[in-house]
Every structure is written in C-alpha cells, then in structure tokens.
Length: 202
Image (cartoon, rainbow, N blue to C red):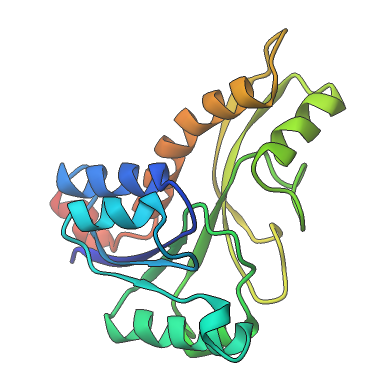
C-alpha cells in the first residue's frame, strides 16, 4: 500500500522537493497527499503546485488563535487520509489539539543538527548552525525524530546523518552541507513508516 503523507512547510521547500522526487521516481512507496503551510505564498507551495499536489494554508491570523488554526489544519489532514505527517521546515510548534485530532497518526520532524544537542525552542535556521560552530563541535548533521505534544526536539530519533565541521566554516557553509544530508534523511525516515507489504513488493 502506497503511504499517503501530509508535508508541513513554511519556506522554500527543498526537503519537500526531495520527498516529491523520491515519490515520483518510485524510490519511495509513498505519495504526498497534501502540502500544508502556515505562510501564504512561500516557494514550497509553488513546488506543490508544479507537482500537481493539493495544498492548503492555515495562518494563525486567519483564525481565533493557534489552537483553532491547528485544529482546522489537522481536520484537513485527517480528511485526505494521511497516515504520516512530515514536518519539513515547518516553523510552528504544533498545538496539543493537533495531535488529539490526528490520534494514531505519527508525526515526524526534520531538525538541522544532531539531537539531543542543539535542539529546543529558538533553535532553528542559522541559529542552530551558529550554535554548533560556537561550541567547537567537530561534526554536525541532521535528525529526523518523532514529535509528541508539548515537547520540542525531544521525540525518539528515527534517522540521523552526520557531516564534518570544517575549518573556516560559517553558518552558511555548514548549513549547505547539512542540507544535502537532510534531503537523504527525510526520505529514509519516511521509508521507515511504509507498510511492510509495500516494502516487500519493491
């Protein structure tokens, strides 16, 4: 059975593109059933449109509050039958009501560092890479982990991939090296949730 997934995005969507490409090439026995964003007009939504994938936008300002926005988001995801939710550059912490509405549907997140280090509130984008550099760490990487209510970057690790921190690196050069591994890690992580019978067929 091809795994229907919902991908949540907030920006450029390069990891979404990696997922779309893996599905299109049959490298991954999954299909992106919907792309959801909390920002209108972002490049990720254009990527969805080019791939013929439906999308929806749920901005907090369009609803009474975050709970209302995330309840509506979850209802839409449930309505299209997604069996996995993938946070691929999604910049909001999901409200507990999201998990209540999608009870039993796993949620995974891609984080641009090796958790449990360099995680938690405020650790996103270049802030993560700058923290790695400031720490003197000799390696970094990315982590795909399970997401649970009321936690940030604390769920079980699904996949990790590592890269060296090189002399002369700045946040931009390290981010680019990590991003290459993110594209691999997110596809590998989704594959872990593909039903066993689908894996056997391949």
